[in-house]
Length: 219
Image 1 (cartoon, rainbow, N blue to C red):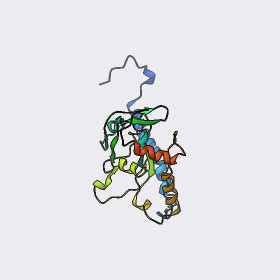
Image 2: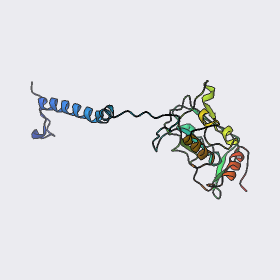
Image 3: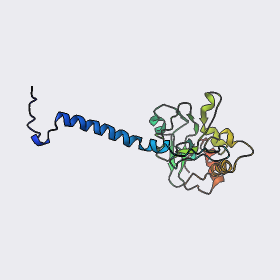
Image 4: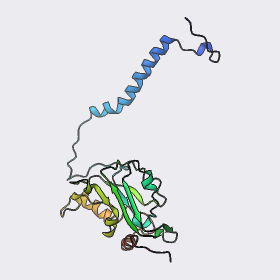
């Protein structure tokens, strides 16, 4: 039985069943080859072993590592927690906070807790985009080990009391570090990844980090 002709489609544009069958096969093979091109390229490439930890691991410019958090700019709006698909961000405050436009520092209620459970975090960076004050970022710390699930919960408010923005893994806490690790540790301690009105004012930034955990009003 012949299928009825579609009055909208011109007869010359209709594809014959046999022709359409082989066209689908061609498209299938073509898309597989395109998808496997990069894979096959690396299959025959020379393997290079990075001598970690003596040599720094190769991280891409947009690598999404453990977060770094600028508590002095956080208004505790909960937008990052709401955007998180696995509910791994915990925020507690004593009252509303807002940015002082003159100093670009948040004032108001005290930040009593800002924590991330890295046992659940999938490093999707969805928490960073909605932040209105740009205070939460994906960092370049690639490793953090723990013995229990509790160890994987990072209390950023506790880090702020020590003047830190990001957790320090065990290899960063050693006395003798490889040159690349020592440079990275110094960069984090000197706030080289923060770019705002407090840039190059490290002592002032540390003071504001501690003040963020105390209730304060705009002068």
